[in-house]
Length: 371
Image (cartoon, rainbow, N blue to C red; front, side, top):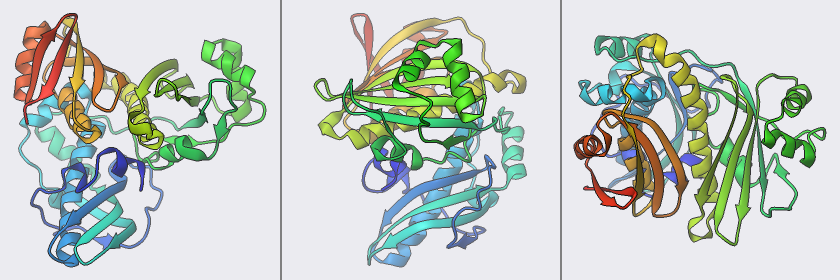
């Protein structure tokens, strides 16, 4: 099972139960052709159950392309313009789909499960967004080399090129994202001492990293497990297409499921790379809304990680929500800080539109879904 299908829960994933049609979509049994176009949403898991296998497959394929189109819009539209997507008239994926490729599939008499690549017509997608005055960024960043490292003990050796953390990254669509990544193994020249220096952010260490991989854009993605406190700390350090940066986030490991937590952390980390590139380009396309506002600290409560993903999407799409920063994430709660021009009162009203409620809890606000 790949990363995205596990993260977003069991059953029919990504909300693949809306009515749709496969008209206009060409389906082949080959893998993707390796194109770097941002208008391809690749390695996308779909699943459906019906009275027979044919109906299940048609439902999964039809609903999958509609969900993939929504994913594409969120990929290329700046976060600060997400609210404009909410008011855009519904767009049928069948009208702008270019093709569907099957990476892998399996089915039974009532179920269909597959991993697909959905390609959309670039100019048709651009036209839809332009007609609705929605800014977008469709220029890919230069490729960054990513070196995932994992260790199960604070003083243990780093695991590279295999294992739960590396596999979590392999399960993502790293070629078609706005900030494409190429996975690399740790080279011998980068010793534990060198890694420590890179984490400190010294210029010499960054130059050594670039020299070892013969690239100016190299990032370490280090995941360290603290089994005692059931926390997975992920540190991103190095230089991506935007520039040098370091970011650390901690995730709570629910139910001792390190693989599940690793997959969540990889998805969030990929979003960081993409968000950095998109934010840098957003001003040129009219995707930045200027508002001073004030920071609001939130604790979001949820029953499952699939519900968390849904709530997280609604938070990102909330009108006036800026600089959304996600802190630690556990099995049932997440820490979030964001800026809103209307402060907590304005955010409460904006959240209500998204089906979210806020209640005061001292220095923070509790957020829950109303449906």
